[in-house]
Length: 197
Image (tube, rainbow, N blue to C red):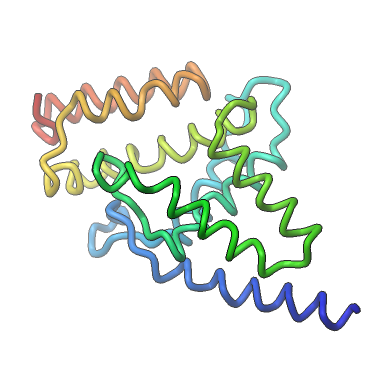
């Protein structure tokens, strides 16, 4: 029994290594390449630890980190839909549900249920922990874009209103401090010409 359990856990861990090969649209701060989804997941999990003081007092930080570490695993099968691409995001839920079934299903049933529940909690976004986790997921690409002179935004012709509409509601739910920071960064990016009206 232990051997089968360990074999399933190892199979899952080897499978999720594929997340390192899923490209995203955000450039790393040096600007020489785009980040991958595994780097993003690690970075937002670390971000949650560093910025935990801005979370509501009831937030369980371990649950936030757990969600952030698994929130993009479904991209192994479903791919990464560009955040501002409405058409790509329309079919995303169905692709991701199928991916969650397969990927989490590699684990022993108790762990599969536990990690799938963390992924679903993030997706639904109703708990304080999920709202804070989504705030990390929204804030980091904004920071990347701002600190690479809007490179990804400019490449895709992203407008100020798109950024505000997609980011600000989730950041307001996560933390007033994150919302204020985002407004300031978006305003600055617009003034510098990195975002167009």
